[in-house]
Length: 130
Image (cartoon, rainbow, N blue to C red; front, side):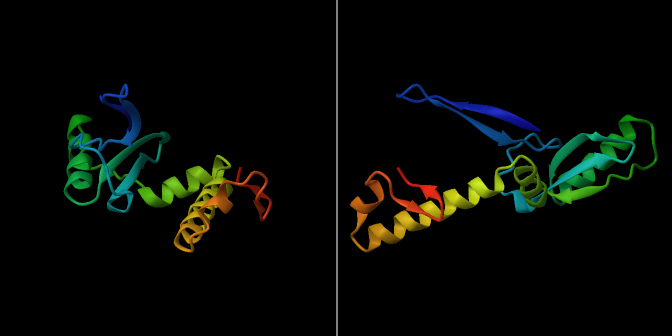
């Protein structure tokens, strides 16, 4: 499940979105090592779990809890789901632009041209780097 985690600090702290495993309740820190499960008859009900022990135990527990011998959960890797979600939300181009900007800044800093990034009006591929 998606949750907000608050981490206190001297500057007032930070609230950060995290994905929590629906089985072990631990944070999923590597989406490549997790999957999204859903029920065929109700695809709007989704669960995020770590691959391996958590997904198998989650399926077994869900079946037991509902008095069923077995429940088939269709699934998708969590990284693929998040890729699709950002694309469908119109963020894929924005994410690509952020990555390109970060790479440009690193390249310019390595070359000693740090100030060029901060000059107003620098535009590259239609992106304004103000």
